[in-house]
Length: 86
Image 1 (cartoon, rainbow, N blue to C red):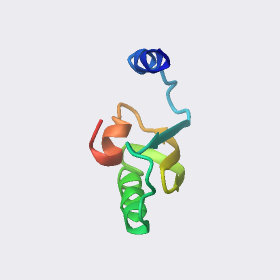
Image 2: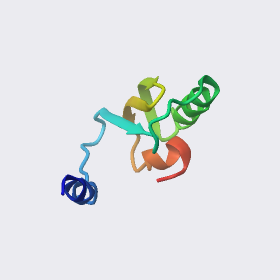
Image 3: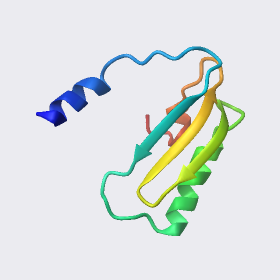
Image 4: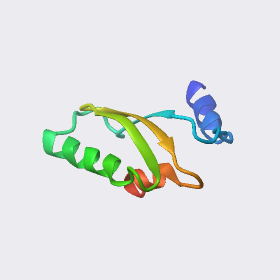
């Protein structure tokens, strides 16, 4: 039942005030750790949109998840720019 609530929450609209930093956290689909070369590739994807779609304040790529602190630039699709998947 908890999984259904989570799915429901993900479909709610997200509101963001202009020019405010946001914290983003995401993880990979399976629980096995990413090798170091893969973590480097994930960091490169996170850095790709910096200065173009968002201002990246901090990025932490851990073996199983990622944390980002960023300020989106006006009218930017931030998560699309992180790796083109959203």
